[in-house]
Image 1 (cartoon, rainbow, N blue to C red):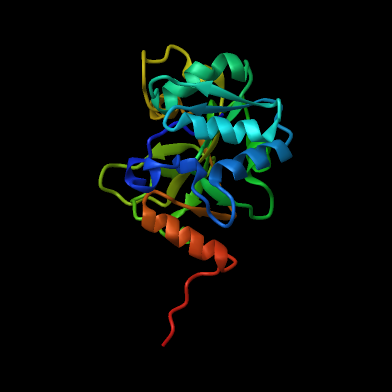
Image 2: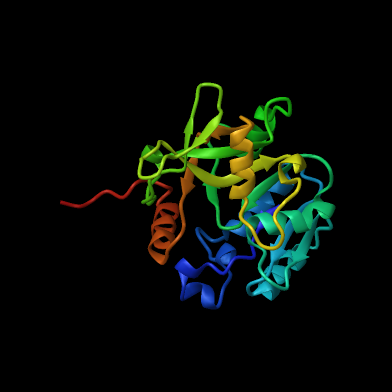
Length: 237
């Protein structure tokens, strides 16, 4: 499931005309890269949700002429959790990837989609999230999202405390994590919190690059790094 229906308000005015997942970095877009990587990994069914500027999302999917990729239309935005629940009949009964349509990642030693699949353990997990280390992430200005114990179990960041890891927008979710969902729009954070309470929320540390793209300045940083082979900016003296 690729989440591509959001308004992208912090990226305005750019997102007044282009959906955030289709803003280009390095000659392609986060949505295009995510779909390419899912296809390369052999995923048999890929669902992309669309609401804001949906015709552009639909046109991109249609241009691929790939029967594996289908669009889940949302007349009204359902937020991340509501979008996934709406798409469950298309996704099927097995655990599935969930990817934020604006997440921009680059591989380390191995594709993180493969690493997530290899780390998935249904006996211990309802949700497995790919995490980025804050010290290795340029342009991230938050305080992090999770603590992680030696077994990979995740705990939400206590309020006002800086923690080491941020959620990259990639993960695997079992349909059981979305049983008895709230009615209408809701965030996937609801499912994350439920899994945390039962000790079934786990994390995997990303060994490659990840760019947090929230504002136009974040976008320019990512574009500059991508155009420079992802080398850090070096000041001239």
